[in-house]
Length: 77
Ligand SMILES: [Zn+2]
Image (cartoon, rainbow, N blue to C red; front, side):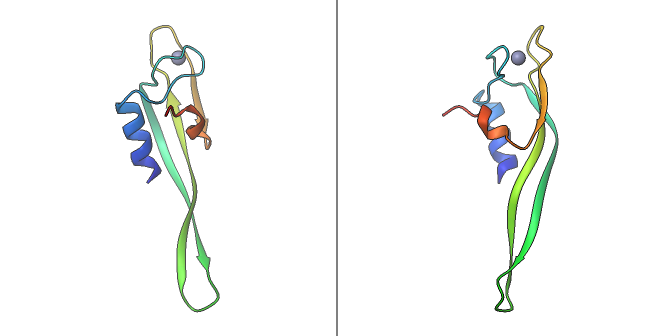
């Protein structure tokens, strides 16, 4: 799940602030957008369409934070 990915990335300092290039220290207000999709044969499946989170740099003197659905762009390999 993307919440776990975000948690792990922050814990492992693999999500970097685009402003100061320091590791993003925390996040809040994680929300997942989930749509139920019907396949037309009487079964349903749930498809996760994405998630939104507020990322907060939290490093000294850096005010950067962003609420985004595109948090994966800040992930490092
Ligand atoms: Zn920063």
